[in-house]
Amino acid sequence: YMPETEEMNPYRKIALSPLNQLPENSEPGLTCHLYRGGLQSAAMAGEGKQELMETGTMTLPCIPKNAGKQDYSLVLEGYLCVPYPHEVLFKLGSTDGAILWLNDERILDLDEPHDYQEQTVCAVLQKGIYALRIQYTSFRHEGELKILQTNPAGEFEEMNPGTLFHTT
Image (cartoon, rainbow, N blue to C red; front, side, top):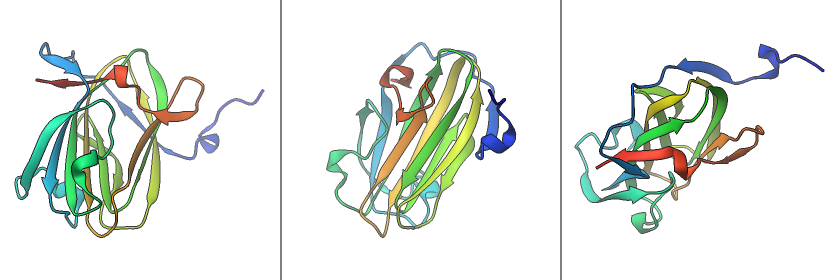
């Protein structure tokens, strides 16, 4: 047996406190706002400078099928329900620009145009609700977006749809 040390976990570690509670008018899934036109920075997605193509609900964070191959941006918003306190690794992978926010804190940042890249963070989460926001833009490359988290066994997998909610 070897106790876990900081050297064994090479990822940046952050600790976040949950929000008070899930809003009453919440439903499963994430709200997805799809915008026409790619941007130099994903941080500009959803900031009112683009034409809104569509708003809908998605079970999991991903690129909508009707987005096209490139030249679009999207913002996914909602809440992540954490059933018990634990450390979780979040992995964000994208071409061009993507940012993952929890409770208004930028926890993963792959902004600015680039070939496919991945970034991982270790989040210490308490039981409760966390505001979730993902900004993405396909500017120079064909769109590719991947958001994974570790399960209790420590294996990366898609986010659990039963833990994602949005307000109506």
